[in-house]
Length: 182
Image 1 (tube, helix red, strand yellow):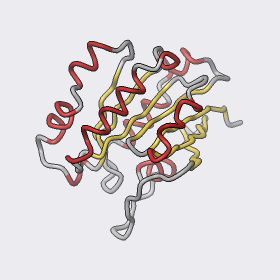
Image 2 (cartoon, rainbow, N blue to C red):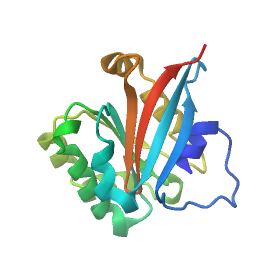
Image 3 (cartoon, rainbow, N blue to C red):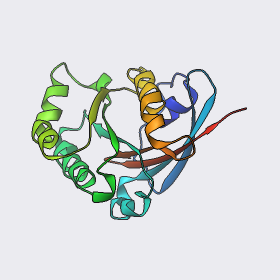
């Protein structure tokens, strides 16, 4: 649902249900000014062993953890760490998105970060990690994610024709390329 919200910006109705990503989904996300499109390939966590097939030319990763599911945060942290130590991803920009914050209580951010040993991860890995709190239902953090994806400083770093972003989720790995709209 977060990718759908990022894609079209429309509010979701209460009937919308969050379902884990199975397989691969494609999304096109527009920059705020509408001058760029980014095609994002979302790859489900159920095929996490295949994520390595999508690491070539990746420059950004969005890793989404369901902050409302305490039982799975540690497992999501293990998958996150496995991405961070991947040699092909050592120069990748990372956004750690704590999802479903509308269902969480005030201290959930801190607890989620503790459960994945975030302070230790930051010391042990090379990547710069940005933490973003988000909710597909309320829209919280969606524009922050869009800003992060289309940040001119990081887009310059990957080149105008290269892959602009990739994202991973305890249920998804997103791979994106940017193109200018004429």
